[in-house]
Image 1 (cartoon, rainbow, N blue to C red):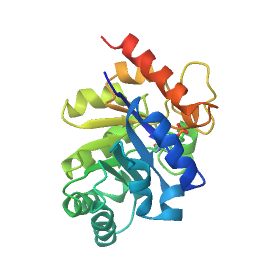
Image 2 (image 1 turned 30 degrees about the vertical axis):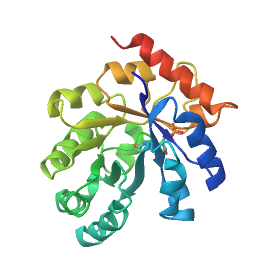
Image 3 (image 1 turned 45 degrees about the horizontal axis):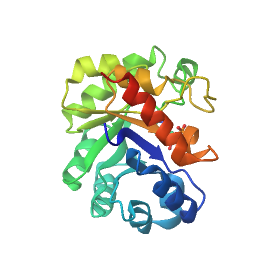
Image 4 (image 1 turned 90 degrees about the horizontal axis):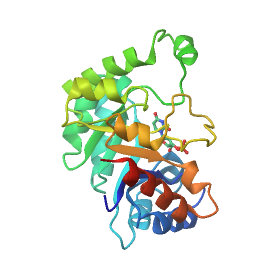
Length: 231
Ligand SMILES: O=c1ccn([C@@H]2O[C@H](COP(=O)(O)O)[C@@H](O)[C@H]2O)c(=O)[nH]1
């Protein structure tokens, strides 16, 4: 494992900070993730800035959720930037997911099943009562059927999902916290080692790395833990 299967969430208030974090972590991780905060402030230029000279894989986490025609237009617009992954909300439904898949043929469309910040009581409050795993499986099945080749779920659901979707779908897990670290606003969490052992392909980790005084060292330490625990 040269570069660990980690997408570092560059949730920074400004481009200089994001580019600095990207430079520090790219020797250790496979991917950097651009989310709403950076993209809404800087637009497409942010992708080149964080890709930098290393050419690291970029994950564009915009969580598109609208009618199919609108999502197709948005996916086409950002597909030109050639991100490795682009997120859409699975709850947008099969026609919306298929529209994104068709509009961005060079990008893996990753369907977000149930946000990792939601607990079972949150799910009940939004009319999705029941175990999170049930909703995740339902949304995953319709997403794959609609052509999504990647799924976002929490580490709690990843083993069951892997058993259902097989080896060809990329499973991405946010909600990853090194042992003993603060869970912050994440509700369904596990350690990097556990998420990987349970079948995740890519671990999304933000604040445990970027909140460290030395993000490069924090990324290297998690990467080393994964190397030690991966057969
Ligand atoms: O269900 C989801 C989908 C996306 N995210 C994003 O991942 C990172 C997590 O950051 P941390 O600092 O490690 O909590 C963040 O960018 C979210 O927007 C998610 O957490 N859960």
